[in-house]
Image 1 (cartoon, rainbow, N blue to C red):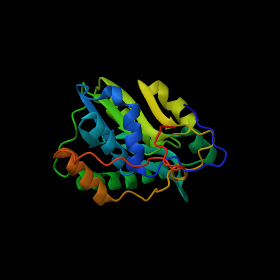
Image 2: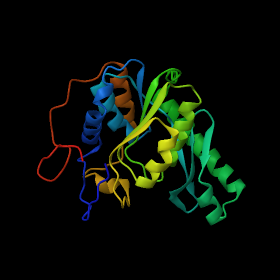
Image 3: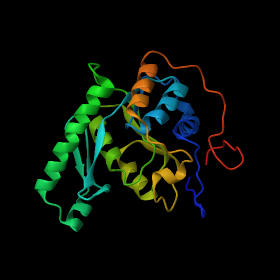
Image 4: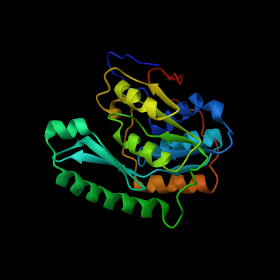
Length: 242
């Protein structure tokens, strides 16, 4: 469902509340055999934690890194994912005349960071078994969609039974690009003018490495008790999905 909002008020109180709303939209998959929820760290982890807990599914991560344009790191010229995956935004690369050597240099730097994150988040634990599993890929929002495209490619190489992409908020053009790559895209809101993912959350505090590790450990050893019911949307305490 597309949301057209003139004043751009926040839709979600925070990532955990958005995750509970997203879980409601995915409720038909509760207790589905072979279901696996994979989060894109860091911001996707709190959302995916709530989804995985509600659906009674295991939670893990798929490691990705954006390849930012030099001196404009917020603009993605591509992304990498574990397993040696790299996807490139050729339109941006052509428009800005970015050389192969620069792309390769930034790829190497981001690969180094990805490996650090792998050791920090996963340690000696093996990557999740994806072959034959029904995968839900979750991030806190889709702007350009480059990191999600890299995650999709990394998962696809391991032979899943199916892939669903789920997110609280997404740019319509990113949804259109990703839909042909997966079985389904579930987005609670697809505002015509996205601007920035953080605009749609009242609290968009960066997710810390400590929180990622804590939530993954909690999921691995059994989820905590169900959270108290609280407001996921601003504007009068209404918790209906947009």
